Length: 253
Image (cartoon, rainbow, N blue to C red; front, side):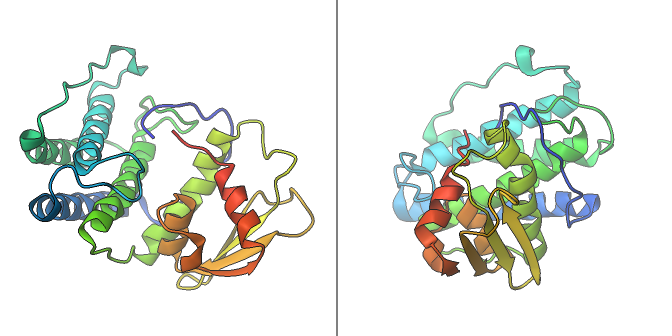
């Protein structure tokens, strides 16, 4: 998600410290770039991306590049809104890896030199560099899994990153997708991250009892709510079909 509006929602402090996000972004960028280059050699630019139906590898590389171009511009210019942003022209496939490398380096440099507390425009209630830092670290993490799935070499997401990403999905993405709160047909779904010994709940209080409890690593739970893996990779206690339907209520751009 690059643009959009979150009209309400309370964001809890992440389980990660602010100074941990930039290294996560740097590692994800490096892994994404390396996996993308390998995937191009093995499968070509037209290879489908399982986690992004309808996308080919070239679309995925361009998307992450353009997203990082946009947020570098936001932090550099401190623009009050994105109305003056000029989107870069779509690059030919054979130039995508070079453009990606340039955007990786630029975003990392810009974020490293910015005060996390400084106010900048974002699409969320949190209007500061810290939001951009966290969001871009997690964006790159998810898209790294996307390119790893193309390559057929998916590596585990670190526990802290997975749990922090799950918190962000619950606290930022869910209110953004459902600004008026859970619909009447919503039921709670419990997420149990075994590697973090932590529980989180989607739609808490919407009904007296959860429709299901989903158990797995924090990383797999994160990938499940972002619809990168099916619920079958988790242990499901309760109605798995209804749990999937509850997650599907959170429609993101």
